[in-house]
Image (cartoon, rainbow, N blue to C red; front, side, top):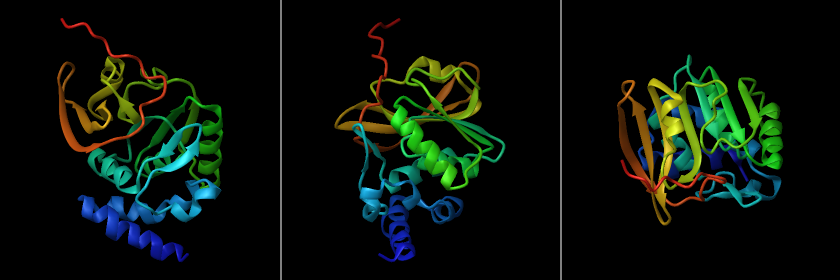
Length: 217
């Protein structure tokens, strides 16, 4: 396989047609080598439009989904990012190239080790990989400028709303399979949030996610 040709095809045939046109994001996809974050058994699928298994029932998002979320978040060089669900470390690596620092929280020890190893081999030094359950928020380092939740939720836990700064953004996948929406929630003031739904998807639920409150006030 000609890796650079495959990478070019991924960008031109999958990612651009999905309205990912930000030149910085497209450049990032050539800088951060996706194949370095894909398990050995699936290297041939590194640039395919498919979820890639990581073991323990987890998987990498499709390239176009990762790229679209990155584009919508518009992460800046002075911002601190929280990611829930480290997976292979690829999304953390992409975010790290845009941000000041990334904290990525992984529930599964095997994936925590995988992400840490991949990030280290790729020379990414501004990511901290934490072992823990961040499904209902992560207080250490809060508030954050950007929060990325790499799994579906029935509803966004309120803790995340409190852990993002005014002006900050949350990328959250909300809903019930098979109809889920990727939402970008921007905190516009101490008490107000603006939500934009950017596309529909169907991904695995975030592991250990809390059940949404059924109470209405």
